[in-house]
Amino acid sequence: MTLTENIIVAIVSMAASLLLMAALNLLWPAKMRYSRDDQVGWQLSVLGITYAVILGFMFFAEWSNFTAAELNADLEASALRNIFHLAEGLPPQQRAQLEVQTRAYAAAALDEDWPAMAGGQTPEKSHQINNSMWKTLTSVKAGSASEATVEDHALSELSTLTMHRQTRVVQSASRLPVIFWYVLLVGGILTIISVTMFGSINPRLHAFQVSSLTLLVTLSMLAIADLDCPFRGWVHVSSYAFERAQQYMR
Image (tube, rainbow, N blue to C red; front, side):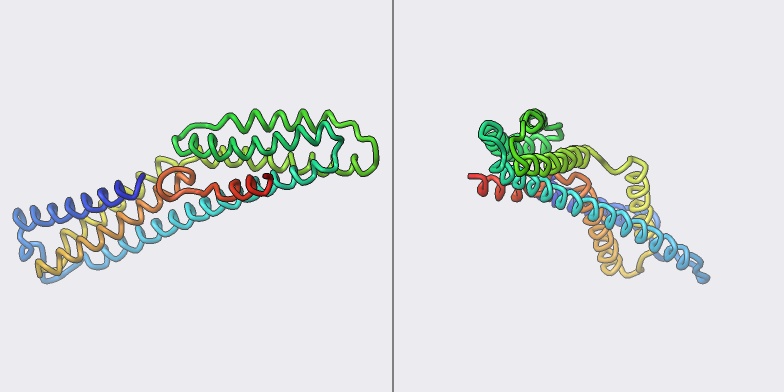
């Protein structure tokens, strides 16, 4: 989602929780919700701690996946630069073809792959160029030991490039399982309702407790949702590594 959409969701969530609190206080006054022998404090603590652990674990897992996607994109661009550099040691025909193909790959990644992944689609242009690069390298007929060595290293780097590209496609399409979203949503709703029902008798203090907790839970879930789509939304993996590779190859 965009930053504006995130802000709107946070505001709507806070407004909904405050309306729930106001309706509950109207239908069931705060003084009537408390007894002399309060038995709900420990239950609220268990609920809050359990949900906090789940939320923290989900956030850490998604952040780890996001940083892994960033690193993978950097390694893919690095492999592309290495192939371009190694092309200098190949026979003239394959060298010229490979230099054109590596430049075309970087352009395809910037102009087509990133926009396609931002729209939730699978990029295809770079895959076609990658296949062409394989054909170019496998057609090399080394005339010397140095050319054979360069070809071997180039094939290794191309294998690495292909692997990182496939990983990038998988990362752009993978999502947090639906069951986890159920856990996050149900846990967040139960936690907010519990605070709404068993908060402070002071109306202003109670409103602050409800709104602050709702904001914290909503922001955490929005952060998880944004990190869950590493190539979409306003928080996404940058294409800067390919921009640098393109500048290098020029």
